[in-house]
Every structure is written in structure tokens, then in C-alpha cells.
Image 1 (spheres, helix red, strand yellow):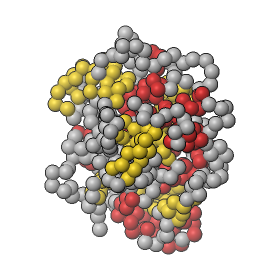
Image 2: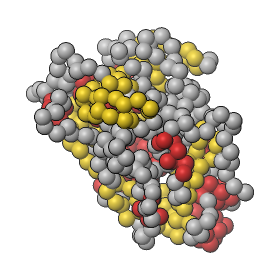
Image 3: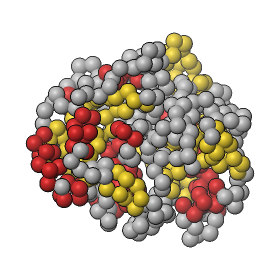
Image 4: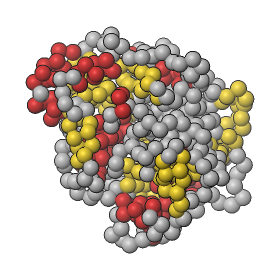
Length: 468
């Protein structure tokens, strides 16, 4: 028994980023149709309540792994009043030759799925055991995100207005981080002034108990190979896009950026920090539960299409039936795999999943995932925003490029922030007691000042938000 790692003909990794992911010895992956499921090879996620009531699961798990910690810690523990995050246990396999995909499937045979109640009353069936999935900004073998960024000219007028007086919406961006440009190259001053940068954290399970370690900041060439990193500036681009579309925002950018550095010469303990996992990103959501809008820049498939355990638990804390506030809006891209398969966290019932249209807004973008699990779509092709300075070779691109602080980029990652910004605008200008999720409901129902039509592709019709 082992995961299928054979790619169909002519469909293997087509860029350096994807190749790095799949070559990392601390990870495992499975080719499953049009998706690549990637996970930490030595880690399992377990629902504590199921393990505590299923003797055979507890016995079998204890034979092969050690409990290292839970999803809840720090501020995350403080916000976990219902215990949903604390129930998600992280176990480390004892045998370094074992594979989390294989072990998760084996252990599921002795444990039943257990439903979770969502805010809207739906039951979400989640497994008792899963691997700890790796969440990169686009896990497809060919794109990360949907295309490389393209240099663009500076705008004719100010792109981000200075923060004015009055009410602001609090938007937290979970992404690659934020890059401040050094003087004299400072075209993003108004944006810099409103961005608070926070390091993300990864869970190091080599220690017992496991310890949360800070992520490295985003950078243009983190591996020192003389090429612009393929995902560098992703969070900077998104932060500028949100601030441009909603001037009255306070932006916190959480840097979850360990996935693209060179693995050559690193020992196994260091290699575990190269990729962000669903545990790390869900943990960041819980750490920033006081936001009005959480813009999550990740989309990934899961083993056997089960919902992501950490994200399901995090949404229980943020918006579930027992949540104290129940108003935060979590927005996530649908993914860039040209697929109808569910990608997480966008597919969760209480997450606003955003697909992308083409640059004319007339049809689905060629790269965009699409399905009835998405909540809306808006333009994600040829999007313009703030970027970095770089003049030279670019990872995954044969040609050198000259970036002067601005770029155009394609991806559902750049459609989703438009929806986050539209929600934030309604919060900043609406009634003081308007909840973020109520702002979303107004937006999609055409009572939020945004034109909404409907777009059909693959037999699935989605609300199309005309956000430019």
C-alpha cells in the first residue's frame, strides 16, 4: 500500500516551485485525477473526541505515533471557547519510513466519520484521521499561482489613498507576507503606513511537546540563486489590491512564507519548515480571530476529498453555533487547477470561496477552479497592484524582467481580495452594528452597491460580482 505518485503522460511538474515541493523528502504526495494531494510525511491529524471513544483507534495510533500537541495554543487557545481547535491533535509517526497518507487511510477503517455543525446548520462530515496537508499558494504541477507576474507601469495617480478619519474595517491577510521597499524606491508609502506585518508560525513536531516557530519574512530571492522567487511579493500584491479598493482598512499581513527556499544541504529538522501546512494556516486564523475579514490566500485538495480538519475546526471557533461573535467573514480563492474538485478552505460552507473570470469578465478564467462549492466569482485575470523592485532573471521564466514596484498577475488569489475589500467597504460605511457576514450577504444579494449577474460554466452557475 502506497500513494500513487505516477503522473499521467505529459502532466508532471512544469515549474521549479512545483518540483521543489514534490522533491522534498519530508513530504509525501498522491496524484489523484487532476489534483496533487501533498502532505507532511510524518504527521497525522486526529479528532481527539473520536480517539477517546474508539479504543481500537487509540490503540492502533499509539503503536505507530506520538501525540505532540493540538491546534489551539496562545491566542488561539483563548479564542477556542468551544474546544473545537483543542480537539484537533497533531501526532508524529515514529517510523521515518512510514507514510501519513497510507496510515491515515488504514486508521480510518477503525474510526467513523463524525459530523460538525456549521453556522448555517449544515452537517459537515469530517474524518477521524487525516495527514497534515501542505498548502502552497497553488499546488498544481503547472502553476503557482496561475502565471508568473508581469511588469507594469506606475499608475497615473495615487493607487492607495492615505488612511482617512472615521471607521475602519480590520482585514487580516494570510499569505506570503509583505515586502517593504527600501529608500529611495518607496512608491507604496501610503500602503506601508497602514500595514502591520506579523510573522506566521509553523508547528515543529520534532520536539515533544511540539513548538511553534516563527516563519521567515517574504523576500525577493530567499534562496540566493540570483532569480526572483516565483511567489515573492504575493502578499504585497494582495495588500495593495485591498487598500486600493477600500481606503478605510487597517491591514494585518501574516507572513506564511517558508515554502520556496532551497532544500539543498538542510537537515530533516530544518526541512520541515519549508512548507506551510493546513495546521499553520488554520492556527493563524485563530490567532487573528478579532479581524472583520480574514483573506486567506491558499487553496489545496485533501486526501479522498474530505474537508480539512484544521479549517473546519477553526471555522467552528470563528463562526460556529457556539462562537461568541459569529460575524467574521473568511474569504479564500477557489484555486487555479482548472478543476471542479473541491479545494479547501474555499469549499467549507462558512468560507466565502471565490472563483475567477477572465479579464473581460465574460466567462470563467481558463485557470480557475469552478463548482457549486464556490460562492461567487469576479475577475482574476490581468489584475493590477503593488509589487516589488527587481531587474533580472525570474524563477520559472526564461526571460529577465524589470519590475518597478508594480505588476499584473493572474489567479483566483487576486479575485478573492476584491471580495474581501468590498465587504470591508460596506463595514466602513454601513451601520456600526453591521456584521461582516451580513455585509457579504448584502453584497451577493445586490443590496451592497455592487452589480451582480450570474455566470454559468460546466453546468454550475455562480453569482458574478462586477468588481472590475
